[in-house]
Length: 118
Image (cartoon, rainbow, N blue to C red; front, side, top):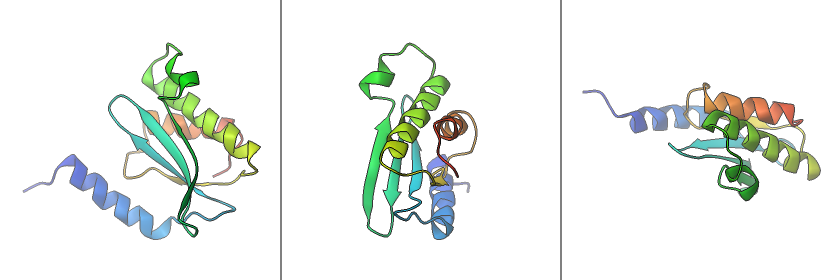
């Protein structure tokens, strides 16, 4: 019997997490996508801390009247802007079990445009 989409995502996520580790110099850029919103965090796995977090629920993004893919790009640009301001230029991208397509891809492109390298 086939598992659910959530089971599939969890399996992929755990497999990815074995190889992807965030450090202080290159934190992990973790993406979470719900049906309506998208969130991104910069995580230092060695210290066990979230360094930055941005979501499409932020006032600057939620007030703009654009579709979900464009909102994801704005989230990527905003987290890149905040990261560069705090001295972070390199990250490790963690798609968190989601396919690299649509909103996840758009967020990554926005982060690259904002100045992050991964």
